[in-house]
Image 1 (cartoon, rainbow, N blue to C red):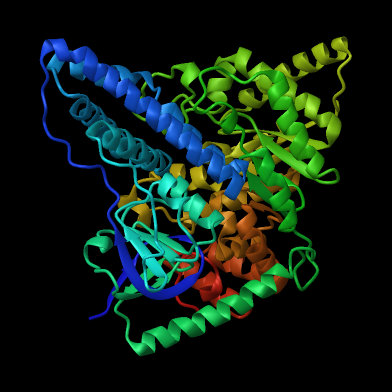
Image 2 (image 1 turned 90 degrees about the horizontal axis):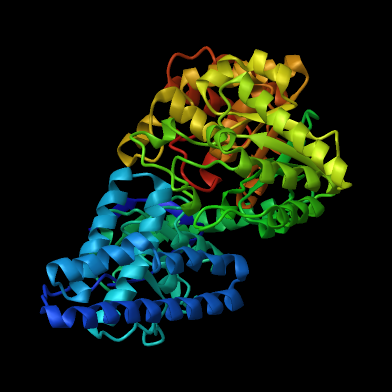
Length: 593
């Protein structure tokens, strides 16, 4: 009997083959107590196991750097840092001393507490770290129990297989051999987990968050895995197999067409030019974004400088990274976002206090203005980078005009110091606000007088407008960027920017949604920024749908009373020009036609 499971698409591609279920889980730990004279020995064993795990992860990190590159290898840094986390280490040692537990049991209890705390968050970025935590837990526990480390060997199979597991850790994923592994399906996981990132780097089709699928499939059972749609079909009939083979053929044709678009202009059939930029997290990603056809960087996140570090980055380190990205785009704008700390990003050196509602608390520009010594260093580095290109300074979570005014005052003061020191910068730099709250959108006309540009952060804007945590899986259907209230805030922001003569761009996740781009184009927004992988598809949208049609569709959509009617209107107009089913990921859209 055929079983169909929908999960989250993590890496594109359609594969058909026999299943292999991998059991890669923490081993069962016996409850062992030790006498007082054995405690120091158990503590020493725990530290030895940590040291062994660190060396093992360093070795895998080096192999990853050689196989995939240094950026991918950095994925293992958080795990290595976890091994020295004071709460983890001291908590485990305390369990040994105070409860006379064996090292393995003490470590297991401490890890269970971590998992419990993090699970309550439910936020994707924190859930991503759960995957790293699992990697650390399995390696240290196996070492303490004397279980041999896993050496993966798939060449014992008679044919290549589709790997299913409860979850996959980064250190296992990077060891997968494409010759024997066709694709990956996991019960847990997120699209942004380190394992998912590695599966894309390895070009292995992957679907995550499939529930308990691995418990319901046996080895050698035939399955279809569609990493573009996020679906797994177990025991398909021949008609289903033929249908997916036909879909695979159509998508390969579509992808070949997208490759050819990289160096073509982003212009609609009726000659409306659009600026298409890229989103990046690391400086090394800028070249890939350019190769995919981006005209500049629309969102350069800078949190990688601070998250997971025990000391703040200095000016020179930041300046070099900002300069490196700017030099990749000598003729285009580079929008660099100042540190967006708080919420789910906690630099170790700040010792940020726990908050009841961290996403409504001390975060982003609020943190930076309260900690000017941290902010000034970043502003100096940003100012220095303006000497190398069109750098634009972007401030997150702006709610008040005073927040922009105070930032500009700090910039002016640092600019004066740079002049006095004879250090070059461009005095004509631009400062703008991210529109991420209803408060900012509703006051956009006033805010525009103090800004050189707006960039709409749609992820937070939708979350705060609808009072829905976007990371809460239970509320996922309620997180709807096509809600009429969101459309009205987008239109207000676009109108305010146009009337003030400043650029309005969109850098949030929905800029990679074909239907949302169609809508926002219709609202008069003509600058978008997306990840490198999404650039070709969004350029395809822009080059296929007439601007006049987008305007007509948006005019009708903003009058619709429900999200469903908004989507229905947009889909009806959009589907005259493109087949929505060919786009990567499922967007919870109605079938075209």
